[in-house]
Image (cartoon, rainbow, N blue to C red; front, top):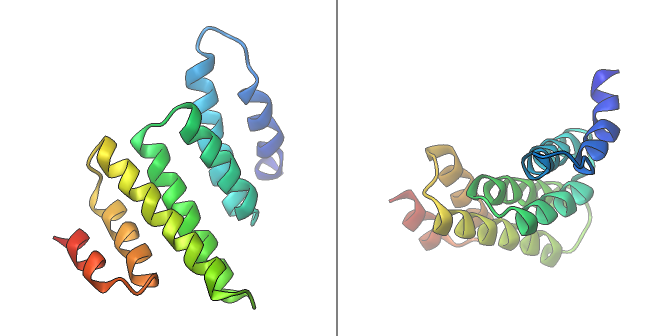
Length: 132
């Protein structure tokens, strides 16, 4: 029940007008995007995460967006969709990880996810470059 109630509460938190509204907005968008992925609404999670990146632009948000795009690409690979849609999702993931890296070097796990996006695009050389 608490999990189901989280979405509306997080959306309400994004419109909070207090003195720390920017911090709360960023945190609420990050949590809402994660909640939406876990709830199975990856398309909406992508929109929320992209908005968060545009508003706040931290490296962690860009890594979250990359992970969401990876999840979207994986799910598109399970559906009878065109390969172009799947590849576009992994390209977006790759772009998000590159943006995050320009802002701040990441953790080993984020490099693994970034290399995964390259691998799914059959860019073995790019994947090896990240592994270095």
